[in-house]
Image 1 (tube, each protein chain N blue to C red):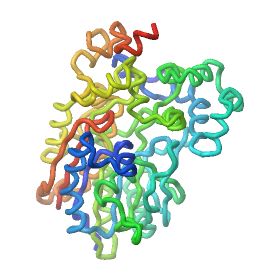
Image 2 (image 1 turned 45 degrees about the vertical axis):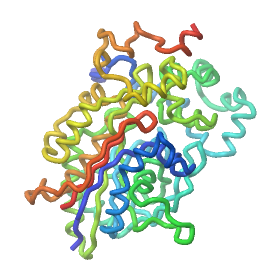
Image 3 (image 1 turned 90 degrees about the vertical axis):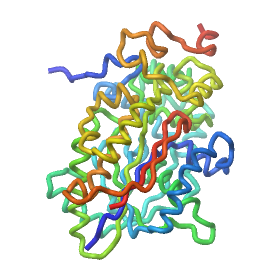
Image 4 (image 1 turned 90 degrees about the horizontal axis):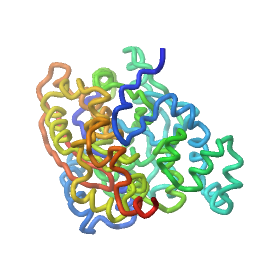
Length: 287
Length: 146
């Protein structure tokens, strides 16, 4: 049977993608940030998954105001890196895993979560920046990501976004779905976005290290406590875009301890301010 | 019953809710069109003519022409959509966010390097933090303009 062996949490700031793509990673501004991902890059090589279930949000890229799915699962064979206005990032096409994705969709919908099933969409920095951070830049002679990826997009653009509790419960349902998939494969679940940041208005640039630090503590040791935070806790304390952190709870809810298993092993914890407008957080947990 | 809006007392912040989304449908859809290189070229060649192809209000068009992102947001624009205008202009997200504060690019960048804007005084309208209405504009860019 398939197993979730680990969860990875990381911010997905677009400027990080630009720094990587423009070869700026050794600049003094960026060096401390990328140093915080060296562990994760090696860990990915040592613990290569068969599939990554990647929770992210679409930033008005695949989904305009024509339709706004709260939860969308990609069941397609592949996804192109999007042109978000700067031209597409020079990163590989993202290969999907249609069989596992369809299995998860069927199981999770039957557990009363209404997922939107998507076979064709472009993926933006929300999905490709975490891949770049954890996998590095693929070499020209083997220009591909290390494994298939199932994109799982959460609406955090138009209010109301799903609550932290609902995301946490959805993670539990995704765990059940993955663990009933017949093939013996090793799945990572990633939660991305956050941490504190606000991109708009006179309050732009808000960072709250105390909130972020407390959130990381709870995420690791008391995830139900993190799931109890309300929309307004995020908006007021972590900035209007800090609400992206609800996506981390989907990945956290899929870990063994939430279903009565043993506590996960903390492999890595990193925090850095700033990357452009944003506080960057990064955690790796193993089951 | 009116929409419940518990976020109206957060200073310097517009939450993109159903009312904003409805008001901003066309300005945001115009922004989406800038994800195609040929549309970016057409827009840059004649901004006014390109905007006139969309069912936007005159105020929305003026806000886009002025590149005043706070004004765009008041008319229903959402920052993730509006970012496509900045991308078309070759601006980074930091330049766009900073432009909404009244700070110069350098002032905003320095604030971020020093750890960002504090939440103290900026949780509720009526406090006295730097994001509060009575403390605008914040930087020398905004002061020059007023």
